[in-house]
Amino acid sequence: AIPMENGVSEMALAMSRSFGDLDGERVGLSVEPDTDVIDLSQFDKSKEYFVVAATDGLIDFAQLTEEEVATAMTRAMSGEEDQSHVRSRFVSARGTKAARELILKSSKMWSSKYRDDISIVAHKIRF
Picture 1 (cartoon, rainbow, N blue to C red):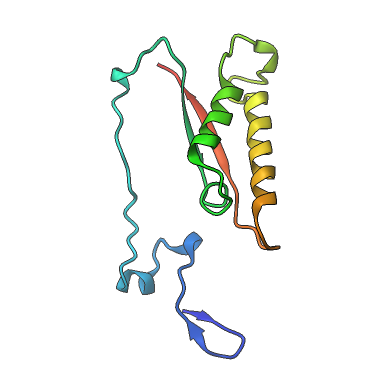
Picture 2 (tube, helix red, strand yellow):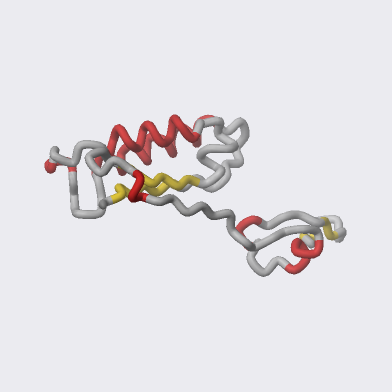
């Protein structure tokens, strides 16, 4: 329950605090994550693959598609033969720039002053 200014409490889902939300559990909230296991041995190892994770503030509410985000990050991070763009083993300057551009684009798509959290992380899969 969330206390409101008028002294009344209302039920709402506090996403960032949903683990251990006993009130939510009573109405069907589950802390069990949805997961998938992907067998990487089935992939063509001569190609590049990436994992991209983003919050709903970037995709669901800002109307950016999952494909648009994945394509932008893949284009930015593909072809590591251009070592001048790699700051370290784990951080791609082009990937960081693409993530920043997606976050700014998403921020501008919100129709009000409120903006949900917007986060993105991408990682190249190494076989």
